[in-house]
Image 1 (cartoon, rainbow, N blue to C red):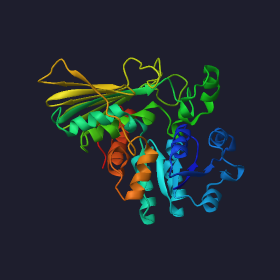
Image 2: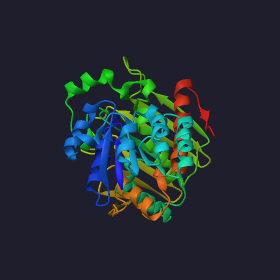
Image 3: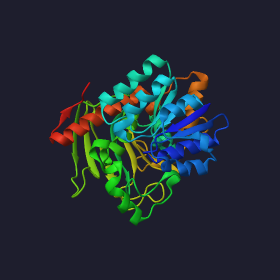
Image 4: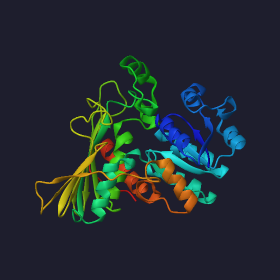
Length: 355
């Protein structure tokens, strides 16, 4: 499969390109960004030639004719970029979140429909073995019917790390912050839009596709910033309440050292509960029969279930439909909840889920 990476707004582009580079049946044929210097690290890492570097997406697609395009633009430009590349007849993998609004998500779906190609949304948290193990136990009936999902997640801030989790100095963070799209409302910045989609989308997956009835969200209002760094969202389902919390400004990043509160999920069912924290080697299962609970080692994820590139290529090669959080069905419900959360935060009231 020939793969091109277009737009480097999100640092995860480097992570996804590395997965392509490592895949035996995939090849990076081009990278493209309106600001050429943002591609230089990827060019070095993956030994790309000058003729594989583009600043115009049309030239990139016309010259290299990729099978798949990876898109990592700022959240508010997801629809724009899918509409740009879809006419070239490519499969598209968009790095999370789905979009900055449900209307934009629907534009993305509509742009892809005439092409017959596949659109998928990558949620990196889906590839954590603990969350996959938790879902397996849920599907096996270990905790009965899911009635609550509790989610807390975030990091020190989006500018403290680049692709491959390369650390950035405090001075560089503060220097970049005023110009960064992550801190611009119009670009889709803020911790709510950055992280709540994980909770809404994986939460919908844990809830087996159920959607809430109402959404209530509150965000902080940091002095001197356009966007939030902390949000709390309450979802009311027919079965009860779930809670999603996002945070930029944790003491540590969860992939190096879990902060407190710990980042991850607690899923409550009618007969038990599961705690699954990011990047940990085991999850905890509590049931009525074992109220003290017990640790269960995380499942070992095997190809093609280890990362988004493996899985997306597997689906395209076999014809297997994209499922779970990467699917448009689950991701769209997640986006519905995000839209309601944004509206609730703006209007400071509870809102019903929008169709």
